[in-house]
Image 1 (tube, rainbow over the protein chains, first blue to last red):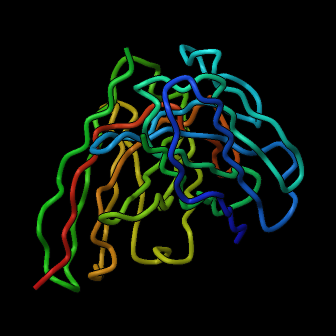
Image 2: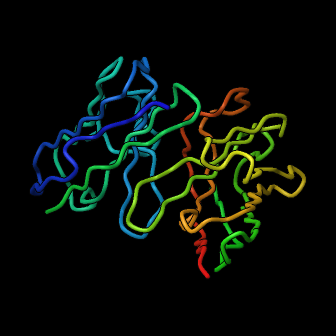
Length: 106
Length: 124
């Protein structure tokens, strides 16, 4: 199985900050990485698919980059609704696997 | 708008069985594969099953293969997860989710819409 390792596991930030979260795959997955945001008590929400494609309705402050094994999610200017957990997922190989999450706190 | 509503979660004893349902609306259900993904209390997400849009293929991780069965009824816009030989480590919120891409013939890709989840507790 492909392991997805996120860093950091948590971070503290302020409104307006630029935040970068990293996801590393245990083997090359081309561009098959996706990013989700999950707020407490809610289901995950798809933000970015295939490394850098913004899901419909997602604000442009979110962006993604990377290839192979190393990927990043960037939030250009943190908003109040962005304090949540961010999770990467690989869709290159069966079984689909998720990273452990990065909690963004105030 | 896309809606996914899970039901069937409850407390069940170890070794028991349970079937979850997910009623879908707001999209052409028969054109999309469907996932089940679970989240144990305070833990991360774990994918547990995917079924192709037409029901001709099912995929599972090793942790549930042989115990869980995903199925669908395209006439009822519903996907199911039959869970047998349940273990305490199966305790989780179970989400159903729609695959973003339609008519995928592989093991699925990224889920784009998720239900609110249903809690399964395996305990004596």
